[in-house]
Length: 119
Image (cartoon, rainbow, N blue to C red; front, side, top):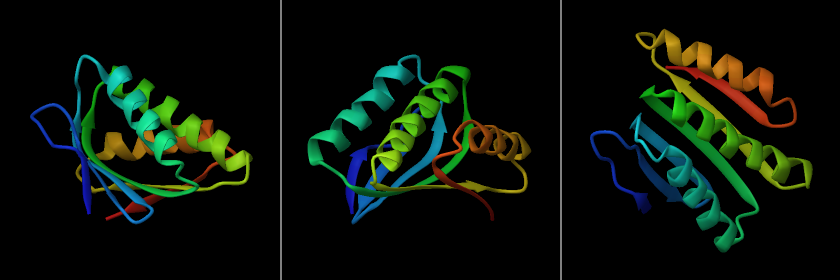
């Protein structure tokens, strides 16, 4: 497993193992756009053609929400281009807002394999 970014008080742990990228923790940094754009750049540099993204966030702010949508739209474009892209949006029962956010992403990304997984 490769650690791409370490978890901090306000940024998530992001790891890559084979073709699974895991985003976990909390995401409410001031530079969310730069943070997630750097992940896209890193994946582009590695020429990733198949990617399963497992999102297990407890909380994220508006800036992170927008940046995650941009990240998912990048994945959706790759999917349309024939790449194997999937999102597994994991939700714990106590985080109902995260379930609603997952539903919003699902609705906004019709060409991306997006699954909401209740834990």
